[in-house]
Image 1 (tube, rainbow, N blue to C red):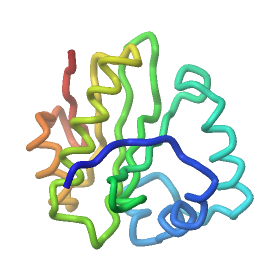
Image 2 (image 1 turned 120 degrees about the horizontal axis):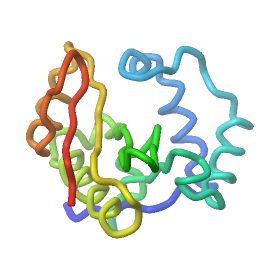
Image 3 (image 1 turned 90 degrees about the vertical axis):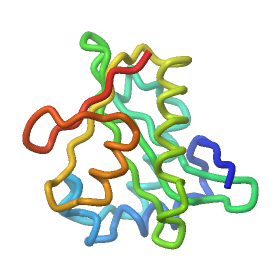
Image 4 (image 1 turned 180 degrees about the vertical axis):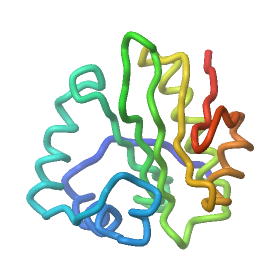
Length: 154
């Protein structure tokens, strides 16, 4: 399946709200309470006008020609001085184990090389999240300590 990354749009609100408020995913993020629909709506609106330097983050929808939303991938905690950012990814259940995560990370790296001054990507992965550890290892990330994985990109 050939995928691409696109910016958020208003029609993504319901699936983004559902994904962000999926408590089973909170174990893998810093989130601990649900977002309101108005919060997500404002986020989508601001994401279309703010750049990564101002917002310190950038979220993309993982999409294909046949399927509008396969998941989401984002850069966050962007640090211009260190030229690094953290990466987060959620592939919707029915599209997992199809190479979507791996391809998305490769596309995000290309975005970083071509559009953003980032030399290093980082991922914080809980020790029990075996699928994510395998995905990031396959993508060239190296465990640095505890739950921190890093990859230098060029």
